[in-house]
Length: 209
Image 1: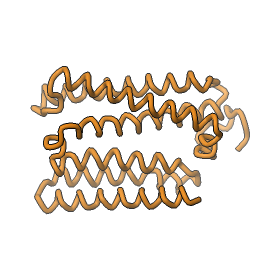
Image 2 (image 1 turned 135 degrees about the vertical axis):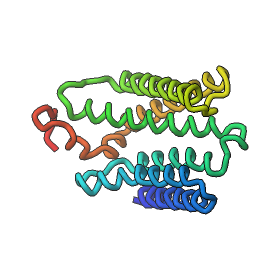
Image 3 (image 1 turned 180 degrees about the vertical axis):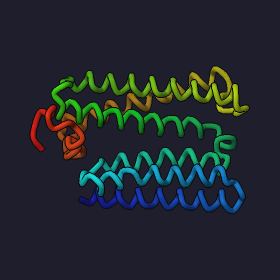
């Protein structure tokens, strides 16, 4: 219960910081960043909306990680930390990679637990999580390359930057996969995802909720 309360406080603090960034961007006349911040804040609210709409408790860690990843991204643009701090982009990629891997782990775990169509060993599950995060990382790099080529952006700073980003994405996914396996082994992943079986077709569920 104490950990949950701390997690809720962290979630609110991160969202409050997002509001601050939006206000800073607005006062500077950076309306595109302000709008991006508002959209990011709305995305951060999705776990709470799902919780109320479907009466399920999404993992609080997912809420905090989602908010943190978006906060780092928006904050890097508003404060220009992407250009000022040497390793800021690395931190952003690690956080985003961890978020994608965690989301993938939750989806695969819930399907394995509730859906007849999937039965997967925990370590194979971790492998697929890493592969999924790596694949999405590649797609993201293609998007950055396209933006640089056709929109005149400066997202990629050479082959070294691209390969470094992919490496960080992979390392983040491996860390999450290891932590995920430990959570499964200790029964904590089951508690974190309790009730998410509602999203599986009742006719294809392995067990009743």
